[in-house]
Length: 87
Image (cartoon, rainbow, N blue to C red; front, side, top):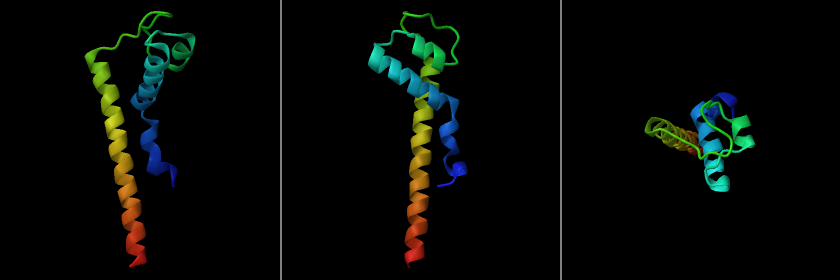
């Protein structure tokens, strides 16, 4: 697979989604040093609960949905191309 085919993984919202998911799942939403080192968000304080606005939450969810959509389209394209070369 070529890098330009998976460039959608470079989405900063997708990266933040992963960082935030990890914090929520493993730290019950309590901000830790690892989170502060990995995130670009500037308004978080160590040991406080993460605080996301509705807009931020929407951006993160949409990044996940858009990425999954692009993965499915890429897989469909690869399978279609592979099947047509067999015919």
